[in-house]
Amino acid sequence: MAGLGVLGGVRASISLETTCGTLLQELEKIWTEIGESEEEKDLMLLELEKECMKVYQTKVDEARIERARLHQSLVAKEAELASLMVSLGEQSLHLKIGNPTSLKEKLGLLTPLLKDLREKKEDRIKQLSDLSSQIEKLNAEIAGFSHHDNASDNAVKIEEHDLSTRKLTEYQAKLRNLQKEKSDRLHKVMEHVNEVHSLCGVLGEDFKVIVEQVHPSLHEICIEQPTNISDRTIKGLSEAILKLKNEKKIRTQKLQDAAKTLIELWNLMDSSEEERRPFKVITNMHGSSEVDATCSGVLSIETIKQIETEVERLKQLKVGRMKELVLKKRSELEEICINTHIEPDVSTAPEKICALLDSCLVDPSELLVNIETQITKAKEEFMIRKEIIDRVNKWLLTCEEEDWLEEYNKDANKYSAGRGAHLNLKRAEKARVTISKIPAIMDNLMNKVFAWEDERHTTFLYDGVRLVSILEEYKLKRQQKEEEKRRYREHKKLQNLLLTEKEAVYGSKPTPKRSNSLRKNVNGNGFMTPSPRRISVGSATPELLTPRSHSGRYNSYFKETRRLSTAPLNFVAISKDDAVSSFASAMGSVTGSPPCN
Image 1 (cartoon, one colour):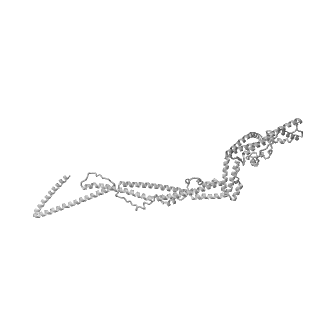
Image 2 (cartoon, helix red, strand yellow):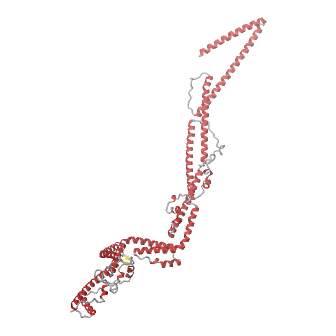
């Protein structure tokens, strides 16, 4: 390439010299024709040479200036290129061609590269500016400031000396973190707002007023004013929730206490279902946990005032009806005691209750609780004594059948063909079978009573009297009755024997009228039933042989038994010979004839 340049320069010089020589020859020819002298020609050629030198010098100067300018431009672009590479974080650049020799070639290679780097810089600045703007906006939202109000203060300032990919990645990571933080904060704020809304619904408070005290954006949702998610807002919501929860806890306790009192008054006053229905939701909270109170307005001040008003109303009614309720509970206690055959507590007798209530010496509620406690104990006692009481009732029914059979046997017209006679005959047969089981019933009942007393280490009282004593006394009375029947049978047998002997001696005679009184006391089995009053002194009458429960004559038994002597009954043992002799003498006096020898 260097040889080609020298050769071209020689050719240009030869061509220039040829042209200049031709022009000089023509100039000399002209000067000769003109008649210029040699001195003038030399002078003119010298001037011409100076002018040519001046033109050459001018061109050289201009070329030098251009070279300096190109060199300066190349240096500036190289500096800019280096700066862009550093700013964009580019490590190295690869040119498309080899190392250039001229300045223009170098500039031609740098110009498109600079253009690309400038465009890349602008794009990078735009990206970082957008990211920075979003970051500033999120920071403002998190801090609780309006992004639009602080737009001038938060003008985006990008450091152009650092536009590297690392910087871009850093901004993107920071933006993602802020977006996640915003999402978490927004979710937390929404949770708090929903909880405030739920608590306000339960407490009957104005949700709008509560949240507006924290921040207006929590209630009024609009694009210009997004939901505030600052620390101050979250803290304000947390404090509002805590305050509402404390209020809910206080009101729940107050409502539960009122509901408990209301239920007690309802039970005390025997309130109807109609009176209870309006407060059903409230009374269901009695005994439940605080979180169960989720119904709308259930803990509102109006609801609490409403139930407190109802409690006050029932308390006013309670004063007037307490005496009636206490006496009613006392009657219930007496009824249970009657069925259980135990004695009620005399301290709560109706007369004493009325006196205590009239004198205001005792709280009616305490008195009622005392009676209800006695009722509970009486019911428990009933369940403990039920098996024995059932057996006692069975025994009483058997005793009733026995008494009926005795009355039936005394009836002289029992075999008449009247209405219902066949039914009475059937009943009599069944009664005889039932009466035959009395000894077994008595033994089983006494065994049960003994087992009950041994198990509980206490006596089994029946209407205040030990049941074993009642049963033993009944057993003795029954033995006495059987002994009287046996004696009567022997007496009757002896009487018939004497009458037969007398008829054999004197002939038969009409039966004296006095014997009619004996027939009236003969039962269906041919035996005479003894008179109820024919018992030893100090013992109970046959009317008192069985406890109360089924007839008037039985109801007085256990009351009279308390007055009975505990001394054993005395029976007079009469020998057969004494009975015969006494009866013979009696018969002799009646018939007016001497006794048999």
